[in-house]
Length: 293
Image 1: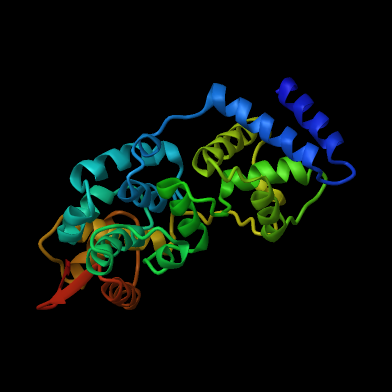
Image 2 (image 1 turned 120 degrees about the horizontal axis):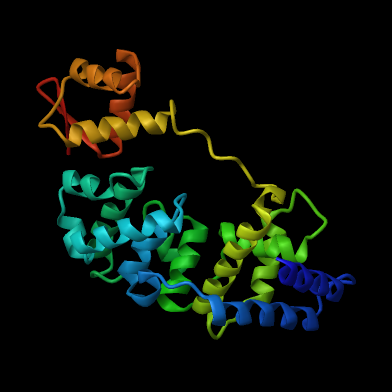
């Protein structure tokens, strides 16, 4: 920690009168040197096939890498390419996804696979303009896929990258806007090797969080994740899990199973939630019983 504090103090002196080319060179040297010695290894860094990158980037939304590692391996074994995923039944997809949370991402991946086969001849598009048309792929995810799958110098921000730039370039500020960070991300981007540069930034962000806590609390966009227990996310996830383990349940049977798990809910709320899940393509109703599609 002492060595890291010294590095940051020295760097802050180099930019006290503004960000200069010298400051940028110093910043990049610090990040690259750390990465060369401490870079993390992940399956999606070794396998940079566009499908693998799409899967990992969707999985990593709102989920820590330590949890994604196991699920990514299970997913890739079950659905190794766009074709197998597009043809897979929702029941199997939710079974493999179980435990990840935010189940919308699972159905989004299936829809992505279907669209890639239908509109792009089975090949993931390379441009952010096309990538952003895919379900659950916003501007940052589109740019990250472009960088990691195709080594394109696309600009994006994620939690660890934000941590790095706040710590290095905004040491005495709070309420830091992503627009200010994005300018620096673009200015410091290694355009010849954006893929590994982003790896290096993210790995350094992990170091900063482990050492100083979460620098993102100084971001204007920081929001503390709501509790899972008692949330609508818990209700939705439990409903899908129970339906996936059955051949169909009436709404009364489902309410009873939820009650036994200390998740009390009304019939009205259950109907509303089930309708939402049906609209999203997760479930269907047949003969007054609810089933996974």
